[in-house]
Image (cartoon, protein in one colour):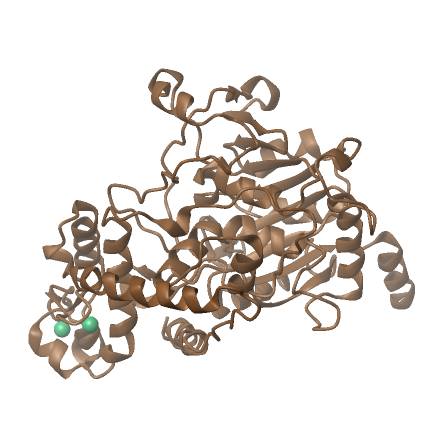
Length: 508
Ligand SMILES: [Zn+2]
Ligand SMILES: [Zn+2]
């Protein structure tokens, strides 16, 4: 665990030096700045109101979160003393640090002697204030998403700032707004920024391999139009669907469809079919509870007229790191229909807009793979696995040799059969991780997984994801552990038969 903490911390330090992007060329730079200052000033009172210790928070969900931490996290000072093996000495955190508001130590005395806490304290305070800001009832301008992109205006995927600017988002005036917006958009933008021809991941910066550039070029022949042609909805009339398979989906399957629509707006001539598949996929509420939602969410492609986003944090706190539970049921839209007849497992499909269809399938991927396996095409299909936990020990499967838990990538109840099946499709498999250590743990697991090691080639080399969430997620079992959703990214695909035969040739 200490390794995880250390390197999480390294990335904390690295990311705090995030460069501000100068808005050169912005015609109204002067007035913009003036507005910016006004906004800051008028906001400063609110900023003070955002800090509460967890037990004194006005919001039940934040108080519940404090209770969760108090019942899971051991005091770091007690844990580091020699007699920590004695049960009565290992106390849980009860005392709340007055600077960050988190339950941090067993007592004021241990808080006072802990010089390490100040390394975490300001980051924890930031998370505390972010949580209160989300619930403050203010207008969340950062969740107002822009409509379709004019086709002559190029989008930059260099980083969040340039993306927001070139995509016409309301200006993100504070770091807090950027954290909120990046958390909302990290899933669709991770996909979009990798697949798009303007992607910041290239052969030149060595994030894309030669094999990878072929995979991406294949997808881009369908995602984009030939050079010079207008990339508009009309241009897509004869194009095949792009299918995005999100496996092991959890939180991403409960994002409102209009957030996923932001992916479509990066590729105006494409029709996307997004499949969320996994045992923790969020399904629509039962039909009789949905009257209120069906009228407010018209499935039109036009989002410019849309009212404010009703994206709110869950009312009760749920754990977010390592073992997140299945998200709550999602809204049932007018055209949502059950797909259980089609897939034989709990599932739904919603044709949300002319550009976007979403299917959710609550089952392990192995159960439905036979229904898809003959249909995969590297030109139109891609897999995305967000923090799959390949390198974590399985909760259910043990090795027959030594009785130790198998790694999830080799476990029959988790990814054991899935990754080899994906490799046979030759479609690109994109994977994210929530910290440098998480990425490294997953990649190391590839080298010990039967039917995976030696069977894949790199598409994208492991590294930071420019469209990860900038918001810190804090672990209840130890608030010193902080990670960020989709921090890192890499991708592989199955080796071509030709390469495999050549290798055999060398061996024999
Ligand atoms: Zn203590
Ligand atoms: Zn503190």
